[in-house]
Image (cartoon, rainbow, N blue to C red; front, top):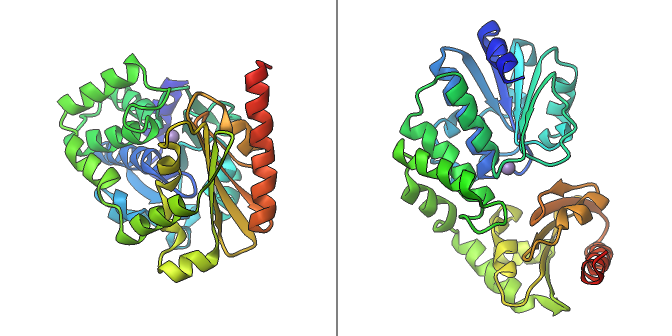
Length: 323
Ligand SMILES: [Mn+2]
């Protein structure tokens, strides 16, 4: 299977690379790492994302070359690489239509339950997708430059939440260590990922903590369009808000409800003690990992709030009964 990916890379010249909506550091780190690897092999690469690169990730090499789907001529592409997507629909409607009908799709991902939507699939339950991309670089015998190592390391830091999530194991720490030896810039990653919060987002954290409701180990905050307007911030200013809520003592599950303004509510779910919130996210058409998941739900804030919290309560009680 891995050898087939090497053959495909040899065979084709023009390679599209994409990842999921609302891209974070594992998505963008993986995408740009694949780009750097293929660039070094002399391939023509087309990095494309439906959503913009968040400011906090613009420091990664190649981020400024990211295309939006409208800038892309799809018939240019010989093969698509889809990275860090548990399902193909995660790339967004337009790109999904293009990729679905394509003759050659390579799916590289670490999400449990990935349906192997590619013609070739490298799906492995690693802590981050960038861990798989590192193996790909090794397989292809590509030099891992400091820029490439920094992309890969960013994915590890983000998806383990700085070695705090339950996916932190010897393998991921060893790989991080190797990447640091190869020149990954740990401090640059830390500053960009964790110490570059906008003033707007910082104030939003204040608002969220002041207005959070707490009950039975569940903490939640809802952000209406009105709140975003009044505070002069956007939904993009909420990247780490859910983690802030989870960091409070005795919280089992933290939930953030954001009114997106198109009749949809974005729900971010975080758990602390190994409870699987991705199961609840999937009930509402979303997905993710055990401790960090999300979904987009039609409805108004109150309605979505009570539905999701209802399911979370059920899950907590099931866990406590040991079901
Ligand atoms: Mn990931």
